[in-house]
Length: 425
Image (cartoon, rainbow, N blue to C red; front, side, top):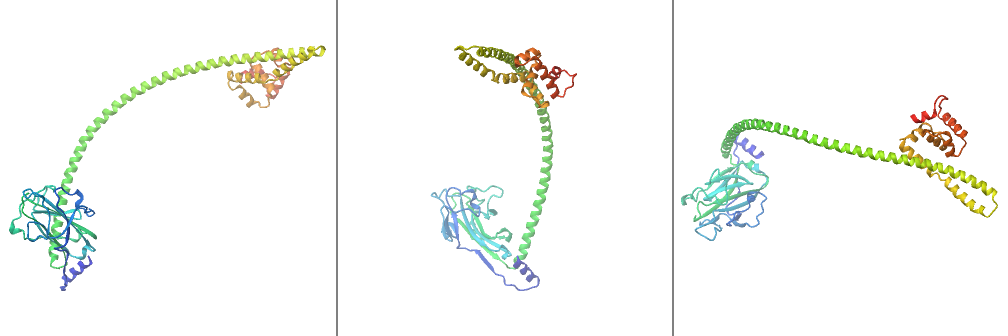
């Protein structure tokens, strides 16, 4: 770019700068070529394409012409030759702006499509708007008086990249019986100031063409935008109707589904409640039975105590050999009387029947002893003083004394009935 500015300054001030042309690609350079019957892969025009099954030869390349330096194949049938041949060459550019312009000199027979770094650069004597394939024919046959013509095309620096650049070409015959094929190409870097008007003219034409294309594209985009907006409104209207219908259908289905689920849930919950109530009732009856059994066991314990007392009195009076056997019986009775399991069972089942009674009683009156807690159980069960005295193997006056002691620990006044207090706890 700096050199270009220097050349322009020299031109403005009338300085005579000696600026030479440099051949970057010359006639006689080596090219890769592909002349098989089938087409190469689609990516053959790319820079990074690997030439695995391509051949090499120097230009010009082709067949049926005296200028040819590398003869390529057209197939095994002269009356049905391959339509398309392919050529590639990679060259290095360290600074694309080292030259004002690059001149491309080209010989082709019949038609050609030329690519630079994977982008189409030009097509000559080929269909303009069609997609080029392996079987695309050239528009017309090149006459013999035109085979010597060298076509010139300008390439501007911004079309090239720093480093490796690749030119790819597909040469097409106009007919399968064509007698000759020719490809030759030279690339020249040119710094001649006389080229500046041409460059400016080409740039101006390009800019005008781009501007026209942009205007056409903007106009086209505006039309497409309006069409899209109209189509969008129509689709939105249709979509809105469909959405409303879907929402209504979903609401109806949801209401039906919720109703069915609620009915099923209610039925299931009712059945579950009935089962739970039945189980609770069974457990309550079982606990009632167990509590009654526990009271009977305690009553039996009292009976055992009385028998034990009578046996002890008999042992004291008896001096015979039966004394030893009676003492063994007394010891067995003593062991059963000392077993506290019956009391624990009574507490357990009592706590089920009267939910949380012990927890509340102990929380509010932690100073009560185990014996006093037992008194509270019997009082809450409406047991009379004599019954309590018998089960606990104490004097009825001791039961009264225990009640007084319990009321005192509970901080109850004299007018408060202990039984009523325990019933309401």
